[in-house]
Length: 116
Image (tube, rainbow, N blue to C red; front, top):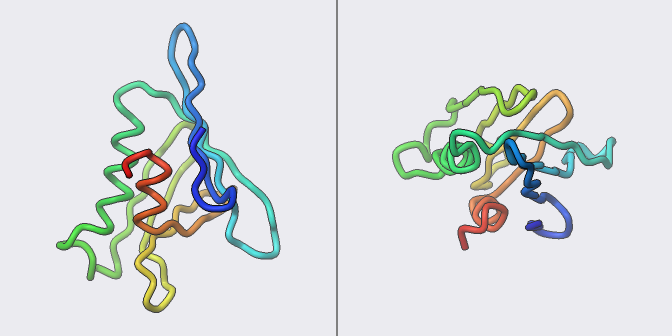
């Protein structure tokens, strides 16, 4: 299990005989909730790398200034929306589901996916 920050997010690999699963556990940034939410998804089709690529695409030079960029897709049973954080000066994205949302910076994403 890999944690980002003080238990802000974790990505856990759960091996199974037929198909391994990943569990993404995230701290909901809405202060009124003080709660975690999770996204469970299959490892089939290199899903983890595809998720990492989508999240990191927001930090690529050609996309950095596109304030309207938003990506919506299905991950496991959850519908995800990923968009640039509206916080002034923040180089971060918001990952949002019906269960909650979290702001992640580039370095946090790299640590979560063990890229640095």
